[in-house]
Amino acid sequence: QVQLVESGGGLVQAGGSLRLSCAASGRIFSKIAMGWFRQAPGKEREFVAAINWNGATTHYADSVKGRFTISRDNAKNTVYLQMNSLKPEDTAVYYCALDTGHYYSSSTSDNGHDYDYWGQGTQVTVSA
Image: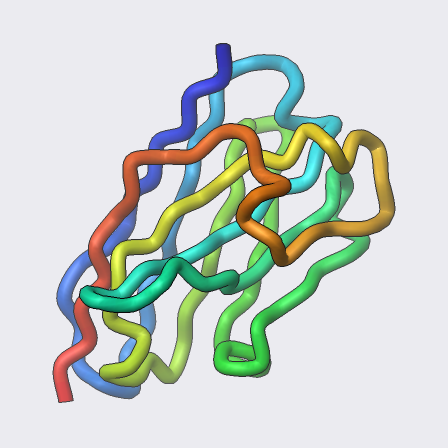
């Protein structure tokens, strides 16, 4: 069984930065793709970023491109989301997710239905 635990959320002013972490249990982590999603109140869950198993491929939503960076440390079973130049519209609960379908793959998915395991989420609030 895989468990994902996010941390690093909080309250920040617009223009500020936060780094989210997602620690995963299980030896499968280093072989599969990971993603970050977010859900704001009253809105659908949306894709934020994804990274393939070795970090060679990353993919971002247009809304965060150039501001957010996804990375991973397979030795620590951890994926990160560095968020810079934060905007009030970035306010949401952020979830990390694990995609076993992209196993030793160079590609990633931006479709939440492709992800098998999810963390409990961490709140990010950006004040104007």
